[in-house]
Image (cartoon, rainbow, N blue to C red; front, top):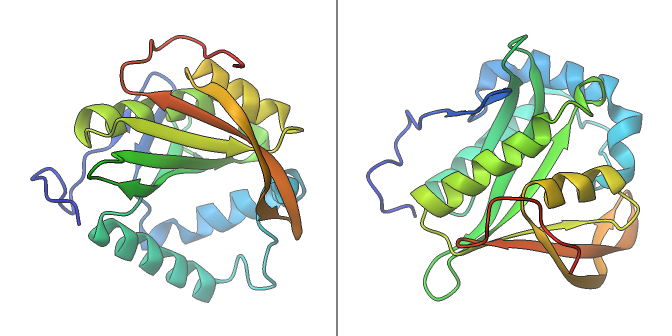
Length: 198
């Protein structure tokens, strides 16, 4: 559980030059299902296999419940990414697997709608969540994993100051197949510039 006073229902939004991040609300369903639905072919190669009811309202309610439960337990915080110029929902980013004690670490995962790709929105979102993790949550280390063929995600992480640390064999089951992933990480006192491939 988050034991710090800033964790209340009115968690402030994270604001950058191009994006605003805030926790998902139940009434985000229509916009979320629209952007996910139109981007399905773009997203599926990089995500766990979609369920038949993936975009149904019932599945959405379960997703929101899980977000709230994870947040209440202090194990994860999900944000939606809104493009500042249009106000439209562009994607999502989650800081999960949050651990305190000797680890003081978390793991970032994210997705973006196809029509919002290539605009630098995700790079800024990753930087904002990293700053939140280090400055507000006082985490020491943030990790992210991506499939070696996902050149876009690699660019995002390296531009956000993450460094490649190695290859995780058969790490996650993505689109129905166990896939190798590169492990990237950023430490609290790393410089904010581009990471190195390591």
